Each structure stands twice: as C-alpha cells, then as structure tokens.
Image (cartoon, rainbow, N blue to C red; front, side, top):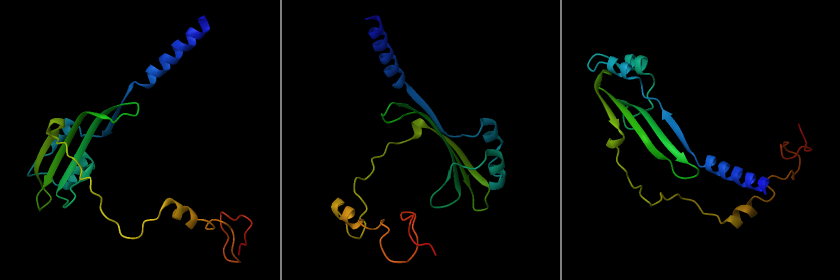
Length: 159
C-alpha cells in the first residue's frame, strides 16, 4: 500500500512539474548606455552598427528604418505563449544615412490585428490524396533500363 501511494505521489509530482511555465527570451535589445551613445543628426549607419550591432530587422519597403526587437514570452505546456514583455527600438535614417530619429516602443504600444481569413489563390490543379499516392507509385523504385544509379536502387548500374 505504501509503495503504491509513493508511485501515485511521484506521478502527480511529475505531472505538476511538466506543467510549469517556460520563459523564453527572443531577440536582444541593445544596452541603454549604447542607445544613449547614438546621437541623431551626428551618427551614420556604420556608427550605429558598431555601437548597437546588427538590427533584428530592416523596414520592408526601404532601408531607412532599422528595428531592434526583444520579446519575452511564457508558455505552459502546449498552450499558446503569453507575451510578458516586448520592446522595439526604431532607428530612422535620412537620405544621407544619418540618424534622424529614434523611438522606443513597449508592449503597451502594440496593437492586436486579425489576419484576413481569405487565402491567396494558387494556380494549377489540386490533387486528391488518392491521386497523390497513386501518382508516386514507381517513382522511387529502381525500375527502368540502364541510366543512372539511385540511392533508392543500391544494386543499380553505376557508370
């Protein structure tokens, strides 16, 4: 009886431990001293890269805005992660490549968006699962005459 209660207690402890939250840190925001060292109107892209490092991403439609992104999330088991903290440092450059503006955005500045549920159409024919399976029969067999050897046909001809 004592042994079975120990097993039940051990199983419960294992289940509770497996449900503990995992905290992940993604990205790396530059140190505050480094950010303060960058001077708008004075420093150029090369100097910013030396002081702050490479940006996490660059603006999609032009290369005049750099983003340094940091995000901390917590995930319990298989549930979607919860964002605990997020900071984005934006560095804008003018046409000459000199820093024109810098802003720090926090989690409270973010906005939730709802993605459009529509799909982008792709052209071509759609195959059923059965057509896909039947269409692959014989493709990986070593059948055929002469030709090249295959990793799927170790006994095939090698030239």
